[in-house]
Image (cartoon, rainbow, N blue to C red; front, side, top):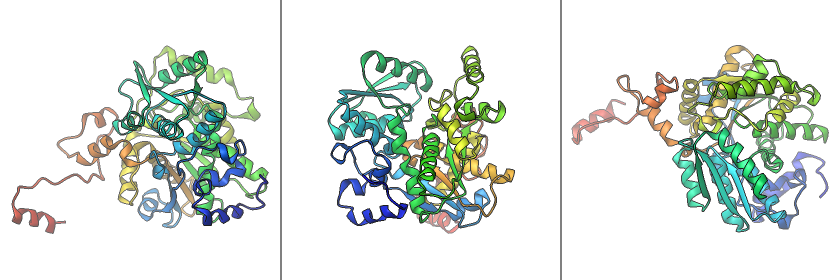
Length: 421
């Protein structure tokens, strides 16, 4: 397929939404993902997401009312951004004749892989999860879509290590984001961001950092688009870690590790991980989707940061949940990890790195109902009672809580409460 002369060339597919590949928010850009023929592609209508301005969130972050954009990936079929990559990985799995596919997951990857396997009907799925390390909203999807779930004693990093060994030993197709086809599909998130901005490049892309697949894919997308002459500049990239899972922040901002043309100091990163193992440091954050200490795309994220003149920050669980409440009050519900992008943007504005007049895109990676427990705990808190799990993660106040009001079953008292709003 010939490459387009302009990104606007993709607009012609908007009028062909009855065609599955043109309907897909990933495959309508298939000239930029040239590894499969149309007949081989596995799609379930992924990528029907939106880029939305949010005045309340813009004011919370501190930028102009029309300068903050939320890229809402929770509208994907499985409820998270993972579908962008999983459609590509599932396509490749069928191309190579895989009979079994596997992944380690904090929840979203397993849900996405399971739904694509159930649609493709070409391969079975095995999911590895850590003990107590998966939200029920996500686990329920993997179970319902037919995936076989193995729960091991340990966290996501342990589960990923085991699944990689199993796939290597048993010849099973691995679907974590170490799979390069996952990252190819995830590039399309940036294509849709540009599409939503009438093909104009924003000043900032702010993304939560977990296994670092998104940030790696975004850097690759912009590098390729610039090389192809389809954009004239590259936005800056900000990757936001949770404080309880801040490997990239520590190595990039504290240790000063840089891509250096691919010759980054591997001894320094290896020493960091060795010390982490010796001290048995475990990731710990309420933002479960980014509760990862050993990101498999670490080196690729360094390249993305280099390409995009990027920076890395960490935010607390308190900041994440406060930002999440602001996103919800603005009309979009997201899971906790998503809100790390908004919390990070606010921090960068306070630092003077982001200017009030900048155009900032925050990536919301997953739907609110992926992890409703954290939402209910935050909004149900009172001055007298704060959920123990929140307190254990450093959340000691809920300034934006909106809990239910308890009132007697009496008409007059109910009306009095309503009138007090």
